Structure formats: C-alpha cells, structure tokens
Length: 470
Image (tube, rainbow, N blue to C red; front, side, top):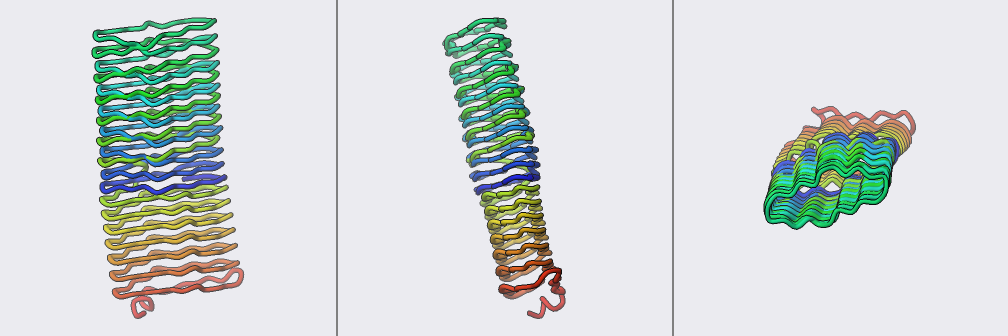
C-alpha cells in the first residue's frame, strides 16, 4: 500500500488463503477486517486521497483489485456465498460500493463518473453483471432482484433517470433510454432473463432493485454527475461492470452465495465499496484512485484474495494510518495472521508474511517510511506497533514457534530484519531518535529483546550467530 496520507488495514479473518497486494495512495487508506475461511486477495489500491478497505466476509473467493481515484473511495464489506471480484474503480468524484450479497456470481466492473455514483446491494440467485455507468449528472442503480438473467446496460442521460425494479417471469430487455430530461424505469422482477440496455444521461440516473435467482448483468452507466447502484441480491452470478465517474460513486452491498466480481471503478473524487458477504468465491479487483478509498469488511468462509495474503487460518490486517506511502505485500500463513494498524505520515511497506501459525502485526505509527518485510512462521507471530517519524523497515521474520515484535518508536530510521525462530521470539519496543536496524534473529528456544534507546544515527545490529546463542 502506497500512501502519502493515512492508511489503515483492518483485520482479515481467514481459514484459507489471503493475499493483500500493494495499495498505492497519496492520501488516506484504511483496510478494515476481512473475515474468510478461504482465500482473500486484495489487489493494489492507487490513490492520492483517502482509502479504507472494510471487512469482506466470504466463504468462497474474494479478490479486491486496485481502485484508482483522485477523490475518496470506500469499499464496504462484501458478503457472498459464491465468488466476488471487484475490479478497479476509477472515478474523479465519489464512489461507494456497498455490500454485495449473492449466492451465485457477482462482478462489478469499473465505474467511471464525473459526478456521484452509488451502487447499492445486489441480491441475486443467478448471475448479475453491472457494466459501467457513465453520466454527467446523478445515477442511482437500486437493487436488482431476479430469478433468471438480468443485464442492465449503460444508462446515458443529460437529465434525470431512475430505473425502478422490473418484475418478470420470462425475458425482459430494456433498451437504451437517451434523455435530456427525466426517465424512470420501474422495478424488474424476473425468474427468467432481464436486460436493461444503456441509459445515457448528463443529469440524474437511479436504477432501482432487480431481484433475480438466475443471471443479472448491469451494463455500463457513464455519467459525469452522480450514480448510485442499489443492492443486487443473487444466488447465482452477479457482475457489475465498470462505472466511470468524475464525481461520486457508491456501490452498495452485493450478497451472493456463488461468485461475485466487482470490476474497476475509476474516480478522481470519492469511492466507497460497501460490504460483500459470500460463502463461495469473492474477488475484489484493483481499486486505483488518487483521492480517498475505503474498502469495508470482507467476510468469507471460502476463498478471498485481497492482494496477496495467503492463509489457511486467520488473517487480520488492522488499520494502517499513513500520510506517505504504504504497501502491504503478501502475507502467507496457514494459521492466523493479524496485521494491526500502521500509522505513518511517510512511507509504509508491509511485505509478505509467510506463516503456518498465527501472525499479528500491530500498528506502526510513522511520519517517515515504514516497511514490514515478510514474516515466515509456522507458529505465532505478532508484530506490535512501530511509532516512527522517519523510516521504519521490518524485514521478514521466519519462525516455527511464536514471534512477537512489540512497538518501535523512532523519529529516524528503523529496520527490523528477519527473525528466524523455532521457539518463541519477542522483540519489545525500540525507541530511537536516529537509525535502528535489527538484523535477523535465529533461535531454537526463546528470545526476548526488550526496549533499546539509541541516539541519532545509531545502528543496532544483531548477528545471527550471537542471536542463536541467546
């Protein structure tokens, strides 16, 4: 995660595989807890504003790809029982993706908008795909409920457009509505196939709920104003395609027990992706923004991938606050991993943690640069908060037992190199106003390094041979 602002990665709980790839941000990034029992990969979020990734709960597979935004982006929790993939949201305004609950497959493709876009929860028992909404006004797509197939194609309008729920037991296709005034499409409820073709609008567009137990696809809405896509409930497959917006975009919750994929939202304003709950596979693809991005909790009992954290146990990445650059690289673990909040006003990079036990990285507060490199452990690893106003780098900890790195407070440069241990290792807080480097500790027993205070430009090194004798 690269950020020049504030980055917080909250806890990810997973009994499968979780990978959190780098988030790039020059503003504020907060990744809230992802609870899954499978695999989670959150791909890189590039942002110059604020990013918050909230918990995704899923029993399948979840991949959150990069959100690019120059404004504010918040991705709230995705709860599905299938597969969810959120591709990059690129907007120049505000985007909020609320929770996707689906029992099938949901894919939310990129929302591009110069105004405000909000995609509310999609509940579907089939397949739902929401393609990009392009609009120069305001667009709101409310929940699509369908028992067959729904496809909502792009809405382009220069006035106000509201697409309400369509109820149908056969096949419904709403072809493109081009309007310079106000358009309202009432609710589509279908047990067959529903396709809403593109609406072009430069004003306000609202697409109300589609309920489907089959396949639902909402194609791209292109606006320059405000777009809100309300919840799609699906037990099959749901795909929300890209919304391009330079204003505000909010994608509300998709609930799915199958596969959900939220494709990229590009925004230069504010983007918020709300919770996806899934018991199947969830993939949230990259959110790239230069504004503010908040990805809310992913809860999953299957496979979730949030840039690469690989875990067969429990993974929690708590809030990382950073005003600089933050990168959380892949954590691999077969046990439990908890990365607590890193606060930094400079640069923070958390590199991959490989563990077959439990790993907890507590908050690192830094006004300079912080890099936490890979921790490999077959036991328990806990990296407690590092407070630094300079540069902090925590290199890989390899352990087959228990490792706890307590907070390092530093106003200069801190580098904690890899700790390899087959027993128990605890590195207590290091307070330093200069430069601190803790080189790899290798131990087959128990090692505890308590607080060390150094002056400016001091370098602390521990050789592997000496540590092995401790």
